[in-house]
Length: 593
Image 1 (cartoon, rainbow, N blue to C red):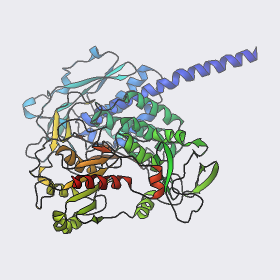
Image 2 (spheres, helix red, strand yellow):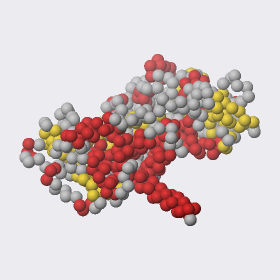
Image 3 (cartoon, helix red, strand yellow):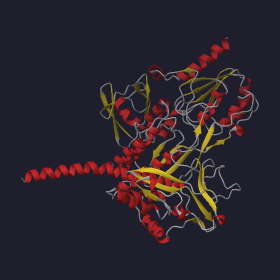
Image 4 (cartoon, rainbow, N blue to C red):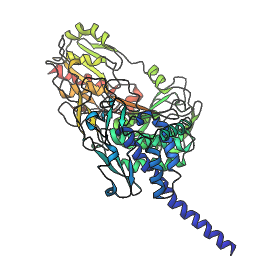
């Protein structure tokens, strides 16, 4: 009898666990959605006094205790009412009264209205440029217009949103205000008590479950409301959010949490998405480079002191897995818009680990244990020793835009003007200022006005996008002498060319200034935006929508070459640059005509 009683108790506990855990995730979703709506779209003065990072942790802690829908509503009301005094929660959206009297001051004529306007987003971000802005109209701005763009929501307009768990919330997105603040005022003692509770939150260690949940909640909301490429990528963002929440309950270490944030953001397919935490010991690599060539993982560079492994060797296994299986796991952590950028990033990320740790690789059925001892990015640059420029033969010049600077190009202009042909290498990231070189290739001033589009946002969830603000590059790209566009011009590029490199390549493609050879670029352009999370974590993303010069989609496509080039294993062994060889061959064929 006792044995049966024991089994029944175990079964009941298991069943309770199975139903309780999903409910915890749903509770966190309800908090997270409300958190994003209030943080970014409710313009009260009280909301500006909140440490939102700590509040995400505190709120995750409180909502995790709830077991019933009534408890969820009570906790949400307790959490958000001191910040948004007129916020309401209900199980039926018809329960809301849109004309609640306490939203309106007695004498409306003595008040203005305020609401959030976002050009991109700058609330809680650490972007230092002037492209992304957020402010509350009539509260934050010292600009004469007092608006980032022309739009006024209805003064009594509220959001009504389903937040999960069968719960709806009502949140005003416009409030009345005067020189004393926004109306209505929150209960001051409740606000002070909330701020005091938040101040005591531990926001340093990712071993804390609620810090991890708070970070996932913050990350979810930045992309949910401001990521500009949801139409270009296929992703169920809410589903990915729930996966990340679930994984957060299982994670134990800061490195676990880093990987969870990477896997969470990878499906967004944004080459600018990077999750980092440089306090972690996870950024060392063995002194080798490898690439996927002819569908095999090939050693492409290695220290001269290593006489056991050769350039051109095929790596069959890594840490007990086949190389392909090992890279499948790495790909899950990398956000990439194109195959080229995915390969470029994964070939680097795949080697990373703690200092002095070992990575086991198998070549020709022999296992080698390589020690991670170098910063791979520093080592790679030192090892490559790229050529800035050279005259390959009389009248044929080579410029490596990845390393040469515009000042050096200026000194070469007389010789370039006398040349017949110029090969420009745009594999990698160009030296800042090299966009000016395009000015010498254009016959007429650039006329493209709207390639870089910054979303204008007033409503959450990408509802009713107001429009776009445009970054005008015309002032940077005006015709300049000497004119070099009459030369035989070739641009070499590949999947490592991202962002600024694609801005340069966009002009080459858009104005048909040169023959493009190589591989498609990364398909990710636009100024990066960044935010910091508790525990030392940092996340970056693309904050604007960039299109090609003809207005067509760039994201996930990139700049496509006119002539494709593939590396070969033999070329690697022989130490040849097959991209450059192809460029020279094309030039010689053109000159022979």
